[in-house]
Length: 89
Image (cartoon, rainbow, N blue to C red; front, side, top):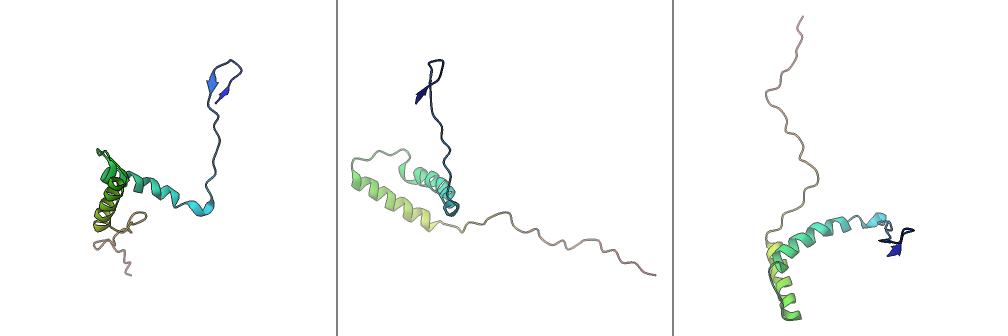
């Protein structure tokens, strides 16, 4: 935090560059959202063993229902009834 010329407190913002080889970090955000919903939401833990148990259980359940990630949209299907322009002489 720093003080502006007028005396109010302002937060200093810095730009953080993401390394070229670390684009996979963006995928972690979605994984954490799903994991928090499955393992941590609405629960309170008494000790470390409870957290480890919830983590293991949620990971096993998520892996049992995992589907491969498909990037982009699927290719358009070929049209069967398209018009064909044939010129006859």
